Length: 145
Image 1 (cartoon, rainbow, N blue to C red):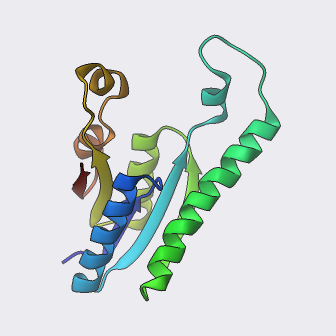
Image 2: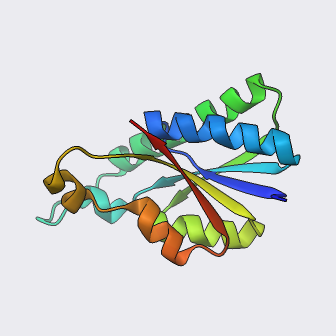
């Protein structure tokens, strides 16, 4: 039985589908729900070619990710679920795994959309695939078309 479910939530269509599936599982297993939104570190905004660190850009990004998280929490609350959530900063896989360990999650739920071209798949990589390799618990990958 899953007692603590962590949803890595990004607000995308795949994330919305994962949120719905997470909600159904939590209802079935009477689980505690946690949402985490992972914001890239400030150095990701600077880029490989260099640049100047922009405090305003980082603040806009924080607000954006907080909005995504708040949207997920609101959607769960509208369905009668109480969930905790947090915005964390860093590399997605590392931060999701760290958060799962911190709360002793039994299940991580993540959304995934199949990419059409081989180039897009190669360039983007697979967060869900890498997460399965590093997760301290079971991982449910919710596929959207």
